[in-house]
Length: 553
Image (tube, rainbow, N blue to C red; front, side):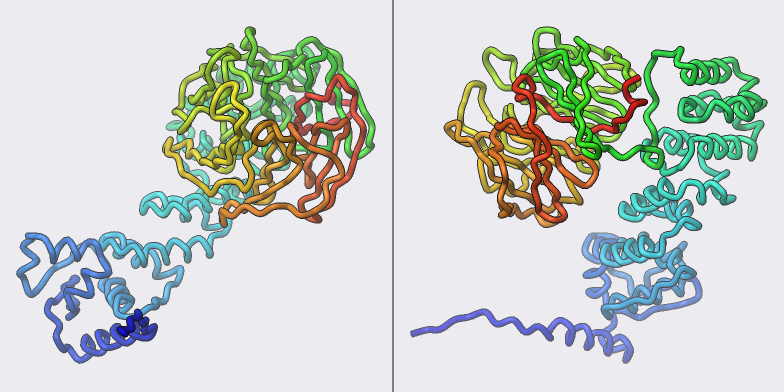
C-alpha cells in the first residue's frame, strides 16, 4: 500500500533567507546593482521582486531596467535603502523616530507592503499628543489608514493639549472645520473650542478673516455659560465685525434665557452627562421614564410622544428621534422638552431600524403594511434636511436589529418577507463609506423582533421571535474582532420574546414579553428585575437618557 503525506519543514524558509543573505554578503550570484546617489548595492533580482511590487514590475515586464545590470533610484535616502535591503534579506529592521520618515518614504517608493505595515504599527505605537498632528499628515500622505485614524482620535481626545501647540495654528481651514464640527471632541468646556478657533484665526488673520463666520457657526454657543459669552465672546473683535456672528451670540443668550425654542445643540463627548434612565415610548400619550439610580418613575404627557407599534427610535446624546412608520410618516426629534419636526419620511415604513453613524441617520428596511418588505436603506442629512437612498440590503428585511460600529452598520436577523413567520439568522455588515457589504457568521438562532446592543466591542442579541412564532428568551453575543457567536449561559429571570433594549451606562435595560423592566450587567453576567411596568406600555420602545429635574423643563 502506498503511503503519502505532506511534511512541512518549518525551519526551511529561514534557512533559505540566511543563504541568500550570505550570498549577498559574499557577492555571490548577485545579478543587479542598485545605485542611490553615491552608493551602490549589489543584490538579487528575485529577492527584490519577491519583496517589492516596484521591483517585481521592473524585472518581470518589458521595462528597460529588466535587461540592465545597473538601476538608478532617485529621490530616496541611500541609508534608508540600505536598511530596507537588509530587511528584505532578514526578518527585522530597526526603526526610530529619527530615521523612520526616510525609511517610510523609500518603502513607499519601492512599494513594500510588509514594511509599510510594520512602519504603520510603529508610528501608531509612538503616537502622543505632541506629535499627533504631524503623524496625521504623514499617515494621510502615505495612505497609512491605521496611523491616520489613531492620530485623529488622539487629536479629538486631547484637544486642549493639541490646540496649545504651534503646529495647531498651521492646520488647513477644511480640517479646522472638521474638528470644530466633531461630536467626538473631548473637551470639558465649549469655551476651550472657541479659544482654539480665535488662536488659529489670529495666526494668519488677514488670510483667514473671511472664513471666520463659517467656522464660528461650528462653535456650540448654547454650551458656553452666559457669563463667558458676555465677558469674552460678545466682545471679540472678529465676532463684532460680522453680523451673522453677532446674531449667533444673541441666539445663544436667548437660549440661556429660555426664550429660544429652536434646535438644541448636542454636547460634545467630553461634556456629556452619563445616561441614568430609560424612556419608554408607547402608543399612549404618556412617556414613562424610569431612573435607574433612584428607582423612581416619572411621567410626561404629550401627544407627540405617541409611538404606534412598528415605529422605530434612535437616540444620540440629548436628542431622541422618532420615525413614525404609519400614514403620517412623521420624523421628529425631542430634546430638553422641545419637539422639532424634521423632513417627512419618503414612504410608509414599519418594523424598520434606525441607527446613527457619525452625522447621518440611517433607516433600514421595514415594510409598507400591505405587501412587501423593503430592501432599501435611507439616509438623512441633518444639514440639508433631505432623505436619500444609500444602497440596498442583500435581501428585503423587516423586524431585524441594527447596530452601528465605527463606519459600519450590522444588520442582524429579522424576516425576509412580509407576513412570513420564518426568521433568519443572517449577519451582514455595511460599510457606509464604501457602500460595500460583508457577510459575517450567522447567529446561532434565527431571530426577529429582538433587541441588540453594542457593549465593549461585543454585540449582544436578546430574545425575540423565532421560527413559527416561537418565543425566545436566549441571549447570544459576538466579539466584533473574533466573529464567533456564543450563547449566554446565565439564568434569565423573565421571558423575553419580542423586546426592546438600550444601553444605560454599564448596563443593558430590557423590556420584554412580561410586565418587567430588566437590567443586565455584561461585565458580571448578572440580571436584575428593576420594576414592573403598566400594561399600556408593554409594546414600548426603550431609549437611554439622562434624567433629572432640569430635563423636564
